[in-house]
Image (tube, rainbow, N blue to C red; front, top):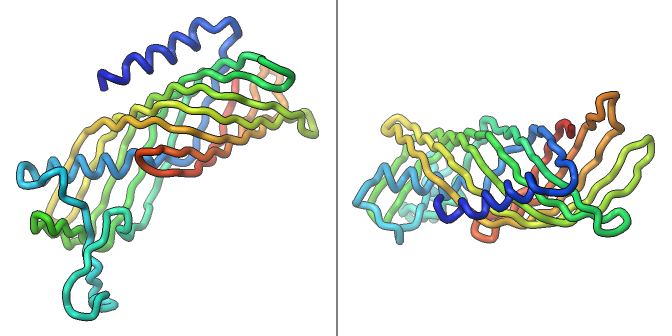
Amino acid sequence: MNESWPVLCLGLATVACAPVEPQARLLFGQEDIHYQEAALEATVLEFLGDGFTDGAAFQISRDDPERGDSNGDGDDEPRDISDIPYHRAGQGQLSLEVRTEHPIARGTYAVVGITGRYGGAQYRLPEGIVIPDVGTELPDPITVTFRAVQLEPKAGLAWKFEAPGGSDMRMEVGGGYAVTRVRTRVQSALIDADQVSTVEMPLVYLASELLLPSDSRGHRVVLRGEVRHFPEATTSARLSAGIEF
């Protein structure tokens, strides 16, 4: 976390000292998923203690009593944690963004901002996790719950286009650095593991927005779709909606 403070402070200082008036927006949308595998790994590491090494891979048994052994010879064929079958029980994220837009050409703006997010998600894993490197098996159904707070300074370019009815379209591309403090709880019939960890990752993003006409107080409804790529983790698509004021 200490290494991320200069980045976060720079983002805050840039927004606060900008020569143009900052904008604020409050959005609600889908939960960001980039931190979840790293947070789950930290929780299982804490639960298994010294008997587990960082080199051991998370895997899950393919043995399903309803369909029989997948490899036909009675032996489990493990697979990576990214292949764990799951049911998502719920997710959501509330975000508050403060940003400035600096005009650099007709319809083109340099965007600098910082976003704070709070959200969570819950997953139900009907099959057990098997970690063969240390002979650990968790065969019972598992519930994994994430609660996360995130700070994300970012910078990019935006292009604005007029749309019918007084609305505006905006395209935006840029990069940032996400620092996420996440609480992960893993529960089953045999375990109840609770762990707080920090996940830090750079990202690039591509976003498209529709801004509806302003109301009498200058507030605008924002509809946003965004693709976020984390080179150290995954690529995700998110939809959100809210108010710009």
